[in-house]
Image (cartoon, rainbow, N blue to C red; front, side, top):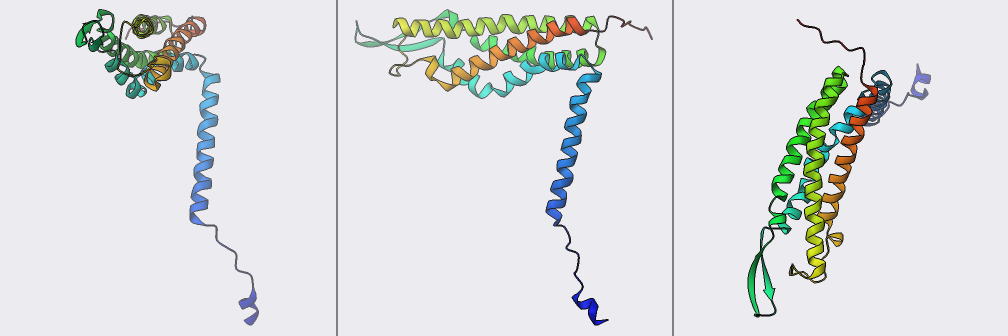
Length: 208
């Protein structure tokens, strides 16, 4: 019939908009389920806190590497007394690369420790994570000490970096490196403490 020509045709929703809405609903559901999972597993927060170093230290490697390189073991400096370039060595900085490697290794191991804490929820898993966290704290403390000692030598004039008025507090690499290591140490410690508080005291190992 002719009248049908003038009937309003229902507009179809744009496919892109439909996909975007569907994806938004999916993300919303995933997020709600993720939040709810923390209520059902009281060790999940502890596990995530313990896993932070393994994520942070590796993610911030682009800042760690230049900071370690800046604190090279051998440094050529200008000696005003002799008006010549001389090489100086500072043993305190030689271990920063090793300390960073230990931090990354212990951080990765703590990711597995965190998975065990979340899955098993027993005392043994928390103790293992605490051992790895102890390594992170020791290596992290040594790494931070080297950075601050390096700055103290610069302030005293013992080291000439070749950069006018250089300070680690004005260098993004050092700032980001320091922040990430401190956050990693604090987070892992907090996770272990929470783990000792929340672990399943009714857990019994079953021999199979």
